[in-house]
Image: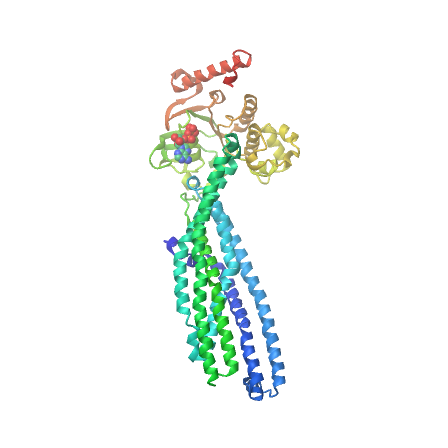
Length: 607
Ligand code: ADP
């Protein structure tokens, strides 16, 4: 399984296309460190020039005898080295930071696209907040590591490598002293990694839980207020936040202990090299210049290791996040896209459910062996009690789920063979719970057809009987509707959703309780526009109020996921079954309502 591989390896595989840039950035990290390590050498050479004069190593190397001349040569070299250090640092920072930006951008957009493509069932079993924490926080964590952490690790490795070679070349007798702390540091780091990984995984996990809690509460703020549940909800958020604090604390306790431990090991190596090297210098085995370079170099070699803790910390956090992001990216969609295009003529064909059963959880059947036919260009209604399976039928028609048994066909072709995009383009959905996006009225209408002209938009608004209220909005079509369209009334949202469907101009129209959330007057208006809209389209209507569907060409009555009755309104009334019964109850209700509105039995509790 890919998921079991170390996250760094997975990231390397994922980042194939960035490899050339990573190689360049690595090269500059290396060069920059090499130039950065030059000053101690230059100090050594300077001491040597002052002490040895005309017989210094530099004199032999460049052939300049006068010590002052040698100092000038040294000054030129120093300027060059520092200049190069600055130049390489600039390029190095540019490369790493831009790489971090590019990668976080690509990874975020790619993961978002991937998530969008996952089937609906996936979202029902995941939390929005959790997904958002992966798409935001986890990707940012990785960005932070690439920004500074990766370079730190590479430069540390460069320091050890360059100085190691130098030490063993010039003073093998004391080199091993400087490297004395290394086994302890390597062992410590590995232990640290092993202990930190699960703690940071827990931290990231908890970030997701906390986010889920927040994302769950904020959209429900009106409900929280109306039930005066503020204190209870604040307490729930506090509990999750405390858990986050707690898991982080356990990670911090460990990561903070790392630096002091490493420092003790380092001090041992540094002191040993200083004393042993000093002894050799006193005995005349080591020149004073070399000794000063060695002591300084030991310090340069060992002190950066104290920052190892911070860098490894960043690395571990980034790897915990990387694993979560790549896991999400590796989540395969439970729904395989078909390959057949859907020509307009085929989309105008008949829709059928053939011997179809469906279960959400694999146990209980929500739909049980259904054979439904939705003739092309006609209106078919589905009625039944709450929970009978009406909306589930719609979700299968839109292929938001696949049947457990049997198939759904359009123009004789199994929906699973069709390209999903083509199928969903062919269906216009108006449901009871209209979702509008934060943006203007125009943006939301153009969701139906991004290229629609203003005239087309107004025409669609006319058909949906929405023009009048749009014209009265403060900025007309440019009025911002608020998140989920909350600045509009239910009836207004519904009219926009119809106008959106008009613009989409689909051959198939699905109306799922489209008028259940609006008042009688709005309902009448919406019914008029829907009647116009459904002309010549294959229309499927789910309605609670039977009066709205009695002109349908065919009516299916569902009961516990099965077809209990079917036929025209008149035929069903004659059967005196479930439908006829419902009809009697509802028309009775209507008479009561008519009586109530005429002033009879004014009972506030009934409203
Ligand atoms: P209707 O639209 O007729 O009111 P639904 O199609 O929404 O009924 O629901 C049919 C049955 O499936 C119900 O028992 C409901 O609880 C169940 N159900 C609906 N949606 C889901 C879901 N996403 N996961 C699990 N069960 C579901």
